[in-house]
Image 1 (tube, rainbow, N blue to C red):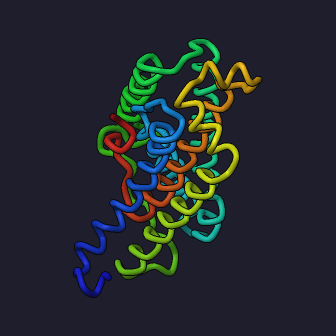
Image 2: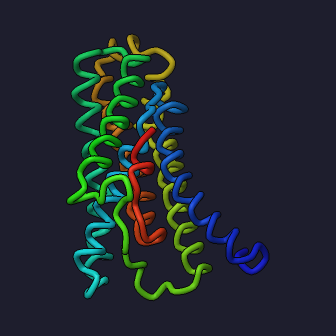
Length: 221
């Protein structure tokens, strides 16, 4: 595909594949479990910043940065799960309340990233991030991004067909009835949101070495 489209479009498609990984997480929450998050960029950007900081810190030994890449995605997933647990436990039914909280958190993260110059680089962003070792060609970057997206899609497909996927769809149809059957619907929603944050984090972790820079725009709405 990169040879057919040219290097520029292969590069752009690689970038869009990482954004799509975050969008799969939105589809999991909104299309399966029935609640809409508006702050997926928070988890994408968090993983991107953590990944970028790791590559800058270990630029002399990039293999170490590659080995700790999954930690950025896991951190994003854990943060999403924590937020979901706190919000759903308090509000019960999901709806506009949850959506607005996630939006507010993304906007707050944007302000922090813009003002925390010593860590994030401020408005200009975190620059000089080394690329993934051994991937000097743009075509290689495209194939990595495409593989990441396919892995996220495969994982999502497996979840949709698993028992928890059935529970998520039941949750979206009638949450109160699912509660009468004895299921903790707040926990089910928190798990869905945590997994969606993990998916966004996977894309964000690869974004930093792919782009070589992480700016606050990545973590804002």
